[in-house]
Length: 301
Image (tube, rainbow, N blue to C red; front, side, top):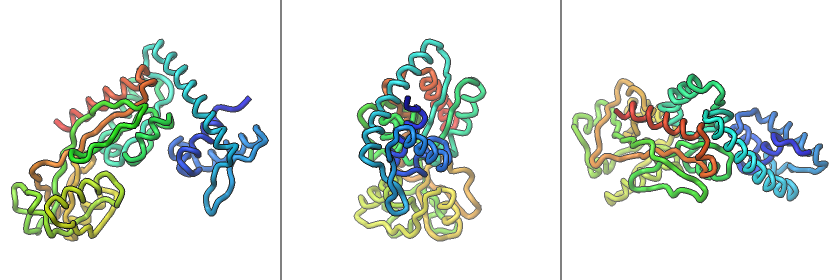
């Protein structure tokens, strides 16, 4: 009989494209995932992974087995959901994915409350880009995702996914204390023309929003420094190297030498919770969404 945990490991490699990425999503070490797949190979007497450069690819047999694993995992989720619903209490494992600033600014207090209130609930957190996590929810790899989009760039919801709004996260322009704009009470988009920018890397939601917004002024933005962490962006601003647009969630105290100025109209980043419709009956999902909204309301207030 095929071992479900080993099938789960193979399915994760199939979805994420590498052993390392699968390990991050499952909360295992890469060696543990490799061992699970190796045991599955012995169990099925079939070669499942082949070396390609520095990585691995699934064989044809492995791709067929991964597709079967996805169906089996969906059936297991249905059974677990039914049992948890009957108990009426959040139980079992809940794998949550969240983008970086939500993982830092919102999830610690949420996860702490869930752990304190529901001792039989095993909640795990994986940090993932909001471009990635919705698809993983739809595929059953992640139970619940915290994602975001921007007011001028709404994110489409994949088929097989439901969502609820957690709240709105306003952003401000951060400038060096000695910058000519630092004394302004508010800024307009035209005030930002010709500035040297510190922003997130190409391909991120925040980077795309910034480029699209600044191009509406008729000028191409000068993106001098592209770094993923907002904390790093703030330090670069404080060093006098440029300006940045930073959401409030997870920002933390500004370093000495940096000043926050509201931008009008205010750029809004909207936060969502995403889950599969079949899992909506799980008390763990409904409770986690409730706590997310409650804690974000406190932060925003």
